[in-house]
Image 1 (tube, helix red, strand yellow):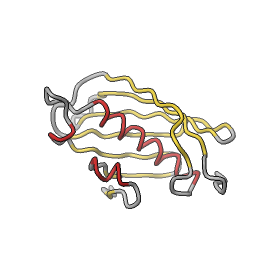
Image 2 (cartoon, helix red, strand yellow):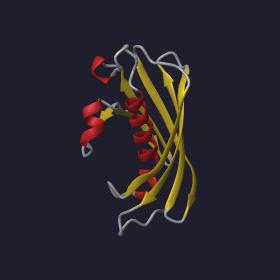
Image 3 (cartoon, rainbow, N blue to C red):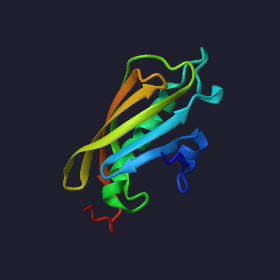
Image 4 (cartoon, one colour):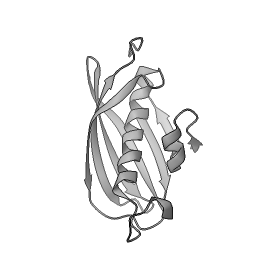
Length: 134
């Protein structure tokens, strides 16, 4: 387990997202529950969950692009299944397809007990002119 904070990305660092593991086309990230990230009734905000899912998919795609900031989210879809009231969320993301300058990815978001609390899918585009994905 890496448990590394982001060095060059201020937003994930601000949220407290940590990289647990990454490989070719894969990433596992962690977001600890914090009161600052909740809605008025104490549930982890849906936007925080969407952010960690988006970030995890971007990290997975980054294993192919290899230029920091060389790709951007074009489309993000998330389906919430259960609230998160404490603990943490773990996101496992994988690249599912590549077509030219576009990548498709999926993510499964679980709570600390392993219950699926959301799923996400995203489309990402290579935006850096020098990025040549392998």
